[in-house]
Length: 357
Image (cartoon, rainbow, N blue to C red; front, side, top):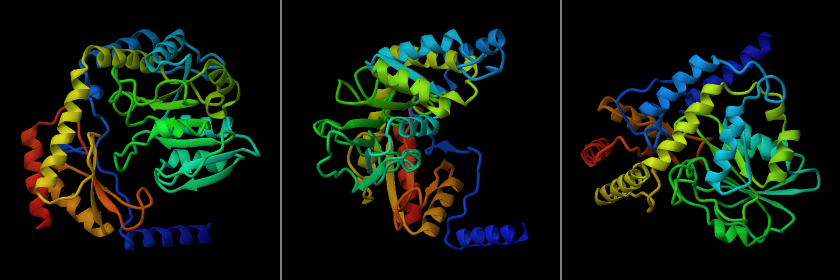
């Protein structure tokens, strides 16, 4: 084991030398980095329902859902979420990562081809690698003609740049379209259902730990596809079910999203405002109203230093470095949430300009 230790220590030294050594840091200061876009993680109704469910149902589920871990509350929640998305069925997984692994290791088979955007999330990349299908990675948002026998995999809102995939264009290919709605569900659509709609998408993956404020993910799609997933997806079959309190919290989250649409409107208004203020200050950012606003720094060490300076000024901003983003594009990933104000964003832009100068 001595040789293993030496090898791993050498890799850690390389990471530190290249400015890529990560360090965990609890939240402090004004939140400009989390995915709690709608502020639902601390919503009183959601906390109340979750706490009541723990008292009534206990802390754990005791087994997988195909054994003693099944609960009526999850079956009802999955049906409600399917109706929310406009699909026939949905299936809940413990995380978005697990859901993407399940989809991409269950549906594609040997002889199939997966077309995947080069900027897709790591869970989509890993799922495609673990499948038995051939992989074709296409330039960001620019797939060539995709045969209708293939699988086309994309995020709807990309997690590090906040740009949107041209889903109507992708639907025209006729391929089995798999869409990760991690940063769209809860935020987009007339009811907050996300950007996926209609029959042109095979399945969507809808993580519930971001705008929905809780945890896990729903795979939504036609009944026959979800039934097949339930029968064959190893991450579902061999995982202990989530606690019943999670179902209670997510049910409450859907209630809040339906009752308080002003939350998503406010977030997108603030996102537009921040983009305008940054542009006025001469800081280039992409247009749009996604709450994800990337400020490209370039060098890893510089991005870490800028983030540290902003943290000292009271703003919880984190540096994003390769391999999360391409080499040479280390950045601040500014994440807008409903708890912010124009005044706070003005102060943030002022501090950012001061750091840059």
